[in-house]
Length: 314
Image (cartoon, rainbow, N blue to C red; front, side, top):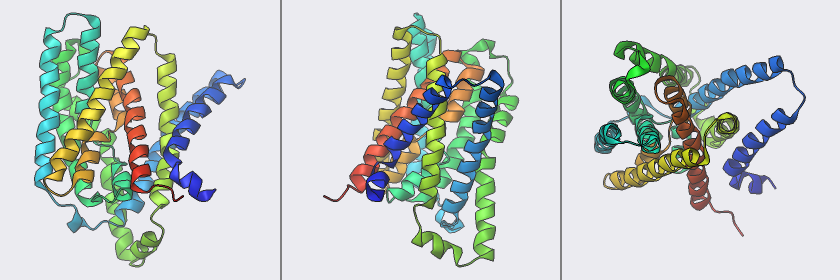
């Protein structure tokens, strides 16, 4: 039973998250209690990611976080497509076309998920070079988002430097602080990396809990969105195509450097919570759904990858 659950951890986590939302919705809870639950998720999810990354980084030496050629190519690819979509948005005439371009652009602008290192390590990739790319792409997103958003949505009314600071403040504490704490733990407890090597699934278990919460939030956003079926399908299609393209191109780029898995996860696994926030705050609020749908697509693909990498024994 334990092996069966481990082999299906991601789909079960996603189903649990979605079911939890509907169960809470059906319960006779007051509005204040529902507000407390929503606020609680906002605190618990970053805490889980923080501890998960700390455990993962305890197994990574600073010397492992090297710059590789594929990182520059991947950055150029994602930035180039985002700029192209921004320009195409200016020529779009229908509402659906503009939403499609904005949603796809948001998916390419969104940086790599901080949790990607956990899945990469689970798939046998290089968590060190992925962590280095995560920092680079978050800096790139902090520059590109404030640059492109005013072109797509001039009514945003927020300056470049304020947008830059808001993004950096939201993302980098979840990257830098776990790295620093992991470095201190390695110095204070030299045997800790060996212990974590004997229990490699600890960060992954924390990630499944975080994933359940993320899917619950995604379900809530989709259920409460006021839109026509055509608009919903447009946004879902844009995020699905962006997800497929980034995983495929990322793996192709990485294959030339012997890091197909790492580059694929770096390009394809996204910080969808940040995407939802950027879409809701700076673009057409409906584009926040692109982050929600993307959360489903990239986790379904991750579940399939993990299943293929470690298939259950018959």
